[in-house]
Structures are given as C-alpha cells and as structure tokens.
Length: 208
Ligand code: AMP
Image 1: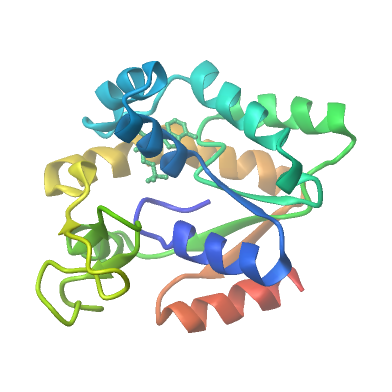
Image 2: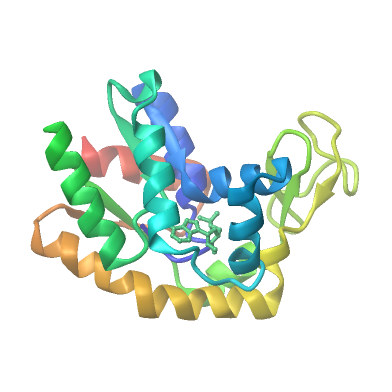
C-alpha cells in the first residue's frame, strides 16, 4: 500500500524476486490490456486516463483469475490492490476460500511533495517497461532506455493534474483500507524516502 509514487511497484518487484513468489500488479495488468486493445483494456483506459479507479468488479475479477495461475501457488505479492474497502473485503473472502490469509500488509510512506516529484519525472520504456527518472535516475541517452534501447515516455496518468487527482482518490478511497488492515494487526509501516536499496532493506527487515 502507499500513495502513487511511494515506490510500491519497485519494492514489490524486488521483494517478489527475493522471496520467489509471483508479483501481481493490477496497474501493470490493466496497462497490458490497454496495449493489447482488449475489451478490458478499452474499459479500463477511460478511467485510468483521468486518474480514476477502475470499477471494483473488474479489478477483483482480474486478481481472482491471476491468483489461479500456477506461479502463484507458493505465494504472491499484491501491488496496487486492494484500493477500496470493497476490494479489501472481496480479497478477504477470496483468500479465506483458498485457506490462505494475508501474511502482512506493507504501507510505504512518502511525503506527498516527494511522491509528486517522483511521478512527474518518471519515464517508462515502451518496450521493456523499465523505469527511469529525469532527475534522480537519468538515462545515459536522452529518451532511450538504458536496458534495451527502447523509447522512454511519460505515463499518461503521470501528468501533473492527473497526479493530483490520483492523490485525492487515494485519500478518499484507499486510505480507509489502511484502517481495515491496521485493525486486523497486519499493517507494517515503512519509511519510503531514500534510495531504492535503503527502502528495500527496510521492507525486508519489517517482514523478516
Ligand atoms: P498503478 O500502476 O498501481 O499506479 O495504477 C494505475 C491506475 O490503474 C490507477 O490510477 C487506476 O486507474 C488503475 N488501477 C490499478 N489498480 C487498481 C485497483 N486495485 N482498483 C482500481 N483501479 C486500479
């Protein structure tokens, strides 16, 4: 959990690799559906472009399906899901049916101004999905991915007015989910400022 720009995706990928479980990012799955032009993608795009949440039933459906894949048999890290109380409750039910409750919920906390700076300068490779930042992690060649040479672009929803919208949606819809997990004694709060490696060490220490 964490506001847009807190570093959820980066840390979720690092942790999933380290512990050998699958990484489930609803944002990545929706962007992939948009790229492929599927019906799901066409529906999701309308919401995502405006920084709004995609409807609960759509997102719950894709997570449910993804969890059935063989690579999720030994555990999973959810990234960007659940984002509403309805999603959190649906997830509780889904996992209860699987007899597999959540082990931990991690909240990566970053001041709002810092998160906005990170998002506004973020660039994503259109070929391999690698991320860079115009100021904090600039590519060797302008607009070219260091990893594969693909083109770098700004995510449509990383434009400044859309970022502010996403922050408001987080405060309204997602912040209550934190209380749901705090009440269940699952919430680990992690200081998200500093380098990727600093935060990764804190994440590892927090969940053992
Ligand atoms: P992210 O990559 O996690 O920042 O997600 C990008 C966008 O995808 C969000 O602003 C939403 O429009 C949509 N999205 C991702 N995950 C969810 C979710 N769990 N519920 C609703 N919308 C989502």
